[in-house]
Length: 147
Image (tube, rainbow, N blue to C red):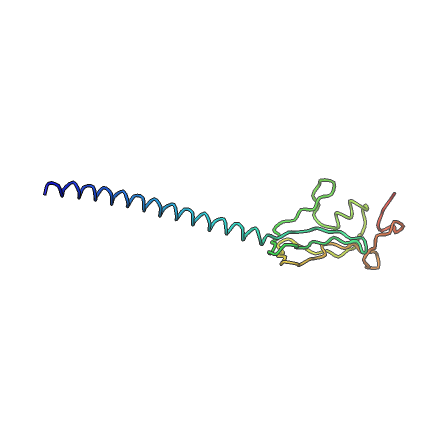
C-alpha cells in the first residue's frame, strides 16, 4: 500500500497539469476565434464602403455627386467653400463668382440624403434668364470666363 500512494499523487499532479494546459489551449482558441471574427467584420465593412465622387461638366455647366462604391452613403453635413470661406447656398456661390444680382439655377439639397450604390444627383446647374441650363462658352456673358 505504501507504493500505491505516490502513484496517486503523480496521477493527480498530471491531471492538474493536463487541465491547466487544456484550459490554456481553450482560451487561446477563443482569442483566435474572436480575432478572426473581428478581422472578417472589418473586411466586410471595407468591402461595402461608399465612394463619393464630385464631378463637373461644361455642357451644360453642372455639378454632380455620385456614389461609385457598393455601399450606401449617408450625407450628414455639406460645407461648400469659395476662396476658403463657407457659403450658405449656391446663390451665394454665384454671387461671389459673378457679382451681385439674380443668378437662377437648379439645385438639390443633399444634407441628410442617402445615396444608394450607383446613384448620382445633379447638385447644381446654373440657368440663364430664360431658365435654360448654361453651356460653357467663353463668349457667353453669363459664364463670365476671361482669358
